Length: 285
Image (tube, rainbow, N blue to C red):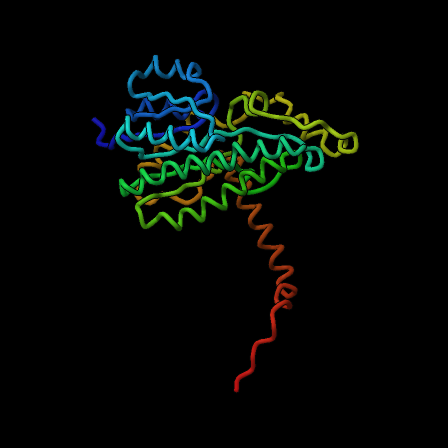
């Protein structure tokens, strides 16, 4: 008989892909899940399998008023929210010059502002409880950048910045924050969860490989196992002192340290120049 405490999770984007797999793992462990999706019928399979431990909620995370109302209703129905997994998101493929204004604003509305609105809605609940764990679904693209994914990367870098700040602000309330910097997981992310800008001829040669990689050709062929991601996050929420950042997947775990080493090397190379821009130190009397 397990002695772990059962928790209430709120998972956005729980109808498919990584969010669905994580929700299933969490439910199998005996926890309750407030599962959100744009369409309630998309959650029917979870409800049929797990019954009352699934609280299905129709939610467009870009609608702040709807987010606040939905989270308040979920907290009232379940009594508490122990873990928030801000998972809703999608990719935008296109060179920085190729993406249009609507595409960029939509990308940030979901990946950044959507996560921000849900976070703001959940925080009062967790502060009242004196406990809670915010799992912000970032990406290895929140650590490094990739050609043809510049605006997706930007949305994740923004999420990283606000979440790192948030962790400092809410620690005194007993609320933990973890950025989940995931690598490639076996889902349809590069197919059904991808918007593509109209390509410009000038970038055909430069981006040929990247465009093919994001065409959907590799959907469901990625190395990461979504269920194992769920198991890892479940384990993380059992920790008294979880990390601010955690990498998921061998590819991400290999790449991130190299990215930061290269950044440090660049700063060190130009350290002397950096130190030329202050006023001269004031001399003593």
